[in-house]
Structure formats: structure tokens, C-alpha cells
Length: 149
Ligand code: ZN
Image (cartoon, rainbow, N blue to C red; front, side, top):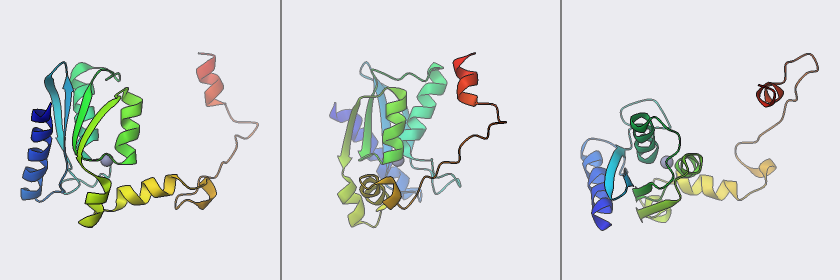
């Protein structure tokens, strides 16, 4: 099991050497690495370019499925809320990480902590405030379209 974490950590170390942030991830099924990812924020203007999300995208593309239940995620850093949410959507329920959110804060990478802390607050007290704009009566209801398809 630790061989997969060793690989995730090595990916993170290599990514720092390549100018990126210190995050690597490995997705494993039945004892075999299916996909890998590293943080690519230094390569693309895409905030979703996190190691875990990239590993998930690659596996889903390769297997042509959204369902990654039974897969294990090995991440060098504790997943952020975005990546954790993607694991919920993909059905991944086993996640191992090496360095914690607190470890990341110590080196100035504090977004995960900020977001995890914010999510504990009421909607109206968060940095990102959600406000509902209801359907007009003359609009087609997409939820009903879905329900009646
Ligand atoms: Zn993330």
C-alpha cells in the first residue's frame, strides 16, 4: 500500500522541480495504478488542475465511466474540498493522504484550510454567498424536462 503513496509523494517532489506545487496523486484499482496526476496550476490557467482531479479525469476517460467506486486515491497532500467533492461524485470512498492541510498551511498553501473553514459556516457567512434567482413563470423548467424525459 505504501508503494502507491511513495509514488504520489515522488510525483509531488518531481512537480516542484518542474515549477509546480507539491501535489501528486495516484488512483489504484485492484492493486494496480490506473492513473496519476500532478498539480498543473503552473501549466494552465485552470483552477481545477489539481492532482486528484487530473487522476480522476484520466481514469474516467480511459475507462469511459463516471463510476470509480472501488478505486483508491493516494494523494501526497490531503485533498481540498473540490477534489474531495469530485471523489463523492465518482464514488471513490477510500482516500489516503500523506501531508495534511495543516502541513500545507505551514508553507503558505492555505486555500484548502480557508475553504474547509468557510464550509463550516452558514451560507450567509461564507466568502462565496449563494443567492437564488427563481425561474420565471414563462421559462422552461429544466428539472421538469429531466424528470419527464
Ligand atoms: Zn484539490
